[in-house]
Length: 188
Image (cartoon, rainbow, N blue to C red):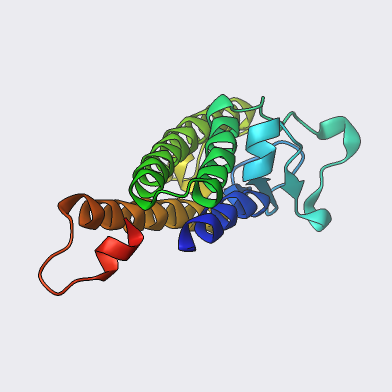
C-alpha cells in the first residue's frame, strides 16, 4: 500500500514551498524589500495564490509590485492526476492493472511537475527582470535569485518512487512466477 501513501504525500507537499525568490536582487521582488524572500507553495502555483513574504522585509504598500502568478494549469493537473492515482491505487483490485495504471499516472504527474516548475521559473525570472531597479551585481544572473524548494523536490521524489515501485511490481507480475516464487501468483 505504498502507492496511496506516496501519492498522498506528493499531493500534501503542494502545501510546502516550491519556489523562492531571494530578494537580494536590486530593489527586491514583488512585495518584498531587498533582503527578503518571496516563497511560492505548490498550492500558490496551482491556484494563483498569494506567495509568502518575509514579514520584516515587506515593502510599504505604495511600493509593492505584483508577485501573484496566474494559476498554472500543469500544477493543477498534477493534483488531479495524483487524486486519480490514489483512487486507482485504493479501488482497483487486480494487481497487474493497478500497478500499471498507477505507475503511468505517477510518471505523468512527475513529468507535468517538472515542466510546470521550469515554466514557473521562467515566469518568475521574467517578472524579476522587469522589476529590477538597478543593474545586477557583477557575476550574477537573474536565475541566481530564483531557487527550487524542498516541497517541489520531495513531491517529485515521491512521484518518481511511486512510478518506479509500481513499474517494478508490474514487470514482475507480467513476467509471471519464476521457479519457487509463489508471491507473484498470489498477487496476480
